[in-house]
Image 1: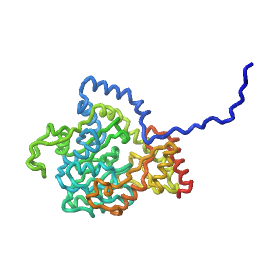
Image 2: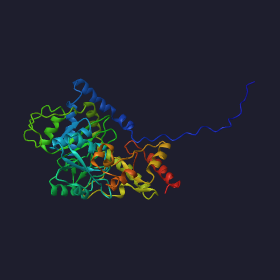
Image 3: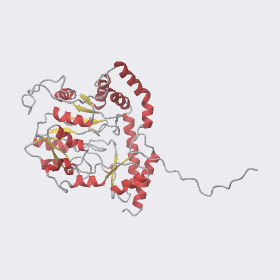
Image 4: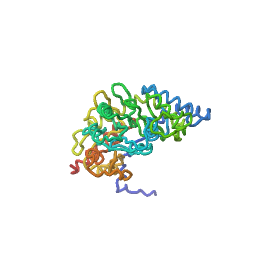
Length: 401
């Protein structure tokens, strides 16, 4: 006779919610794969894998989308900054004023191009460089100012230009995060001598590896940058370029864009407008849920763009109390986040020789201690945004005031 077993005395194991990554493009990339694959077959048939026809095709498409006279594709946003600084005439020892709150590549590119970074504080409301702080750090050696457009809005370009005119400074833009951002219809990166774009995978227009571009309406800057990205090949002599002693040829980099990355970017560019709208919708949902939550100091939608500017949401950045503890709480719940940026530029060990101390740029330091980026990308679902917000609320409801 078959033995009848009693029912189990323990309940089934509880299923944990699926993790929410800080970034993924798995779904959208799958949708785009047939077109990307066709581009890749074309590349294989041509047998030119770097600096080829697909790169030129992407440069042309991006020039039309941004309105730039010139787009120079390179292999990273950082290289684009270095090439821009050099092509714009930076001389060894020249000072370039940059914000103390930014990604390391902003100041690092100045050093790599032979200049000296000089730091300024950020705005009281927002994360762009403060024009008043720029004016306060100008010296006789100041040659350029390079504002950074961060997260979802442009820096105060009118204020920056006013200071630059008074002191004869060249204005360049670290617009690596700023694709789609415009001031009175002019795209970021074209509001001074030139700017850059990064196509790191998490960016609003992202590749599947490193890639970048230089944007400019200046013919000479574009010509020089195109030569510099390929070891100086095809470049003219620089006898008329200031600060370069008896030059004969350009000494450049190997910074050519790969055609595979151009194929991905070309395909994704066609849906960029829709992706920007989607990011804005998700960011607005975050704003609605987190505005007024105890412990959350600021949400992006609470600070409007500068007059004439628009909002394009690269990341959804909030400022919070007990930031690092909240990061740990979210991680324990399977939710990834990023801190932008944990250490301000003037307190980075590599810039210790510049002699700064804590308290020199208080607004930048406060942002580094409180800023937190939450997941934001077109593949993110509304229910995932709600779950992130639920956990933020739960954290502060647990006595974190």
